[in-house]
Image (cartoon, rainbow, N blue to C red; front, side, top):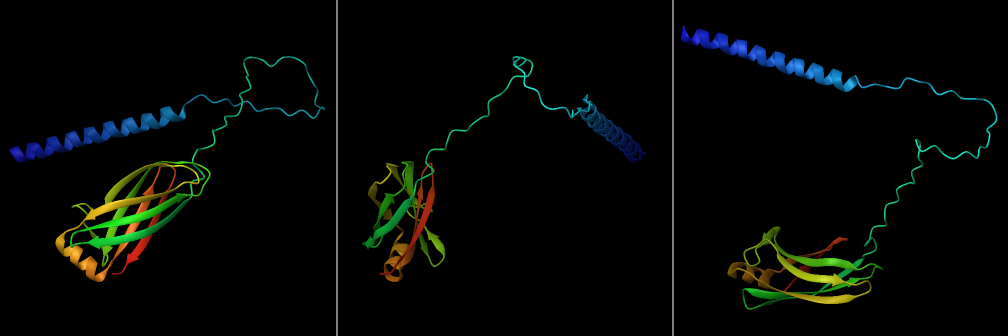
Amino acid sequence: MKTAIGIILGVIFGLIIITVVTVWLVFSVFSSNSQPTNNTTPTISSAEPTTTTEPISPSSPITPPIIAPSPVGLNVIYSVNIIGFQISGLTSGTVSARISNTGTDDAHHVWAKVEIIYQGSIVKIEGQDYLRKDIGTIKAGETITAQATINLGLSDGIKISQNGATIRLTIYSDEKIETLSYDFQP
């Protein structure tokens, strides 16, 4: 008996909820479509245009077009070369790169992301998937040399020093992102 009463109450509450939701949807659709519209049709005169010297009415002001400022940093062009990768010992090494901004705009907040890939897998550098090296600003026409020290696990260091790896260097700035890969062979 209690289950039958529960089922009946559930059906009644369900119908009430469905009815309320349906009424709400109907009113929201009609209220958004019932905004006043101006149904006047403009008339076109075939008379020749006339010139008037009357001032423009303040009720119809002329708005100047909005001109967006030209974006800064559109001409940042990187030339990136990995000039060295060395494993010293079994667990540490260095990556050296020459980064040039050959464009006409400065590159701001530049940083490098160094990744090592061995047989398709990311090698952990100091326990992370990549090493971040902050560089700063590279002015237009400037070339810098950046060097990063990497610390690897013992097994990764041995594998890379014996078999090589791919070094992926990604340069980030506010203006541009550039990626370069270098295949290191011992």
